[in-house]
Image (cartoon, rainbow, N blue to C red):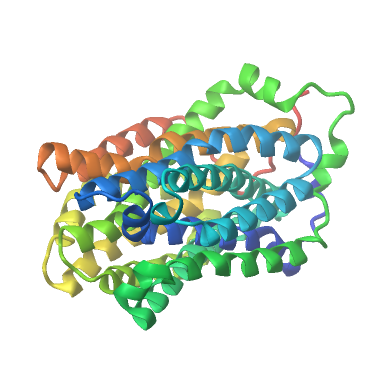
Length: 429
C-alpha cells in the first residue's frame, strides 16, 4: 500500500538537514564520553587499579544504553501519536541539557559518592534522548523520501551520526593535544561536554521550521496506543530488528569505543594516537555513507546486508589481529577494513527497518527493536569486551563475541522482504 508521502514528495535539502542535524549532537555527546572514558573513570570512580576505574566508566556507558528502551517507549509514543516533529525537538533539547550538565558536574574528590550517582542519572537522560532521536529521524526522512532515492536520503542520517562521532573524536583529540594530559585530567575533559550545548542550540533553531510528516494526517483519531499495538501485534518485527542490528552494533563498539581504550591501556599508544586512528576511520565512514545509500537503491538492500554481515564474520579475526601490531599504520589498516564494512552496514540497515514496518506504529516498533539491541547488546559491548579480556586473558575474546553477533544477524536476514524501489507499508488498521 502506498503511503501519502510517496505520492507527491517535495523533500527539500533543508528538511534533510533539519532531520539529520540532531544526530550530530546525539552521537557527538555519546562519542566524547566513550573516548574520554579513561579520564572519567579515574575522576568519578577512583581506584588503585586503573582497570577497575575503566570498567566502572564503561558500566556507566552501558547504563546510558540500558535507558534507551525507556526512551523508545516515550519517543516512539510521541512520534506515532503526536507527530515526528515534537519528538525530534524534545530529544535534542534533552540531550543538550544533560550533556551540558555533565560538563559542570563535580567529580568524586569534590562531592564524594554523589558524583557517580549524578553521572549515572545524566547518562540515563542521554540514553533516553538518543533513543528517540535516531529512530524518529529515520522514520521522518524515510516517509518523505522519493521511492527510488530512499536509501540515499537515509544515508545522510548515517553521515550525520558518524560525523557527530568524528566531531566528538576530533574535539577530544584537539583539546587533549593543546592542553596536555595533566590539564586534561584536571578540567580539560569538561570542554567537549560544554561545547555540546552550542550544537544543541543550533539543532533546535533549525528544527523549529520542520514540516510534519504527511503520514500523520492519515492516522485515525482515537486509535489505540501505538505501544500496545506494537507489543501485541508487531513483537516479531521488534525481535527481528534486534537481531538485524546486532552485528553492526557490536562491531561498531568493539572497533571504535572499546578499541580506543584498548589501544591506550594495553597496546600503550598515546590517547592522541588512539583518537587520531579512530578519527581517520570515522572520516572514511562519513565519506562512504552517501555512496552506500546509492548502492542500496541501485543493488537492493539484501545483497548489501548479506555482504556486510558475512564479511564481518569472516574478516573480524584477521582485522583484529592487524590492530595488535605495534606499527601505527598496520593498526590503522585493520580498523580501516572494518570501517568500510561497518559504514555500509549502518547505511543499509536504516531503509530495511523503515520498509518492514506499518505506518501507525513505525516510530514505536523501530525505536523498540533498535534501542533494545543498542541498549542491551551494543551499548554493553565495551563492558563485555573489557570483562572477557580480563577473565580469559585472551585479547581476541571480543572478536569471538562479534562473530557470534554476526551469526545472529545472518539468521534475521533470511526471509527478509526486499524494499528497494517499493512503496512503504501503509496503515494496517
